[in-house]
Image (cartoon, rainbow, N blue to C red; front, side, top):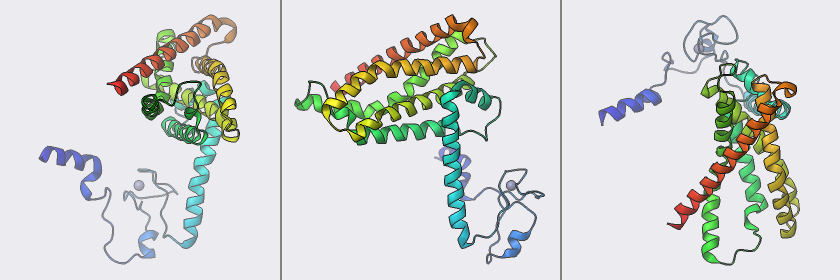
Length: 280
Ligand SMILES: [Zn+2]
């Protein structure tokens, strides 16, 4: 399989690390003192390499373990908290900033999505939210099917993204010249906010395990969560496409309704497809 091998090498670098050769001998201070990037070899004049972006490397000392780890954790948390905080009030503006190139200030949309999905999945597992049903149950087959549906349901978190993109393309296709990927950035940020709201909404069920409370919470959530989702999407469209409530409200409301309809249809189709898969 020479073709596969060469492809593997192209992706993973074929075993040898990229960049200039590293010295074979002992680790020395002299090696780090030279004014060249230790990652790519380019001559360096500032604290960061102009070619690959790596910070000037120094020898590791004990203190680095603490500061490096802490800096990384803090940076990740600060960025995600700051991005989420700003997203709650201005999802469309964050997406537009990001599309226009202000990227270091915000968390990468996919990283944020993975983080919010992970938190939601953990909360759902912890709260036993799906284990309390209204009347069905005790039927082993139904229980087994419910389990399998649950296993697939994590994927449904991405359906909202498709609905946000589809409604945006239908309603604002030629506005401001965004391409499909740029609209997808908006959709992923929006979905992250929605998932964060859903996670916050679940918090009470972690404290009160009473099945009656969980059932009441579920039926109430089914009313206001879709409304909240649609509101987030409408606010985001308004900011991303630079519209105004005063003059563009009919388009925004129509876009919100279209998002709801597409999202609802996708979820029903998804549920139907999973039931079909599980029962065949
Ligand atoms: Zn470099």
